[in-house]
View 1 (cartoon, rainbow, N blue to C red):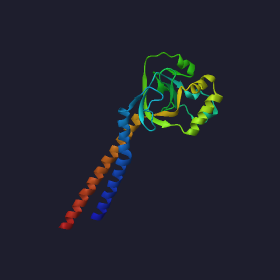
View 2 (tube, one colour):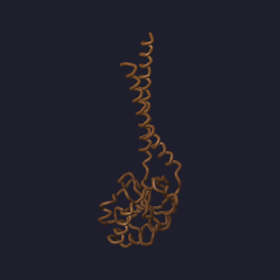
View 3 (cartoon, rainbow, N blue to C red):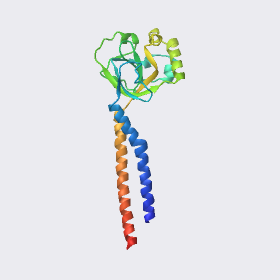
View 4 (cartoon, rainbow, N blue to C red):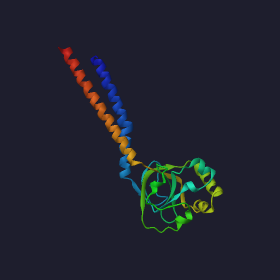
Amino acid sequence: MTKKDQIVKMSIIGVIAFFIVAFLTIPSISEIFEYYFCADVEDIHSLELKEDKTVKVWFDCVISVFDIKSMYYMKNFSENYYLLRIGEDKYIYVHIPTADINFWEGVTLYKKPSEASEYNGEKKYALIGKVKKFSGENKEQLLDSVNSNVMQEYAGIIDQGMTNLDIYVDVTNIKRELIFVAIEIGALVVLAWIFFKTFQKYKELKMEEDY
């Protein structure tokens, strides 16, 4: 291979490394940073609940949304969606990264709002995630579905303004983010090694030409 080939190879490696850092590593590290330094939320209408902002939501118990038997829920919601109770009879939607109910191990979980409203537990739990907005269409369909097709106690949550229907919190899987960063750093190390070897070869060819 010629010196020109080595320069081209180093340029390609540099471009690949740039894209990994700019579009993968920096966003991943930013996500991890936000995870550990996010704002606390203890109110369903907190000003911190802005779209794409990472927050720590404090709650005392959980309601299983999947037990609401309506066509809208069955079509648009999965067992990954739940309602967190924040304060007395205030709820916020949350989407967890796994459908396994064991995710809530150690947390009080209910299937009806009436059960949750009677809960007096003092222990507080917290989840960290990114705020996502329900679309206007989703919000409208959600209201119609809850008010028309399910038990009255669920409709009561909506009618009484107990739930923030504008947003939900998509729980961050921090282990996955850390694994991604580790993989990205590993890829950068490999690229750096290839770059170093290529540069050495370039120097050898240059020295040969000089002689």
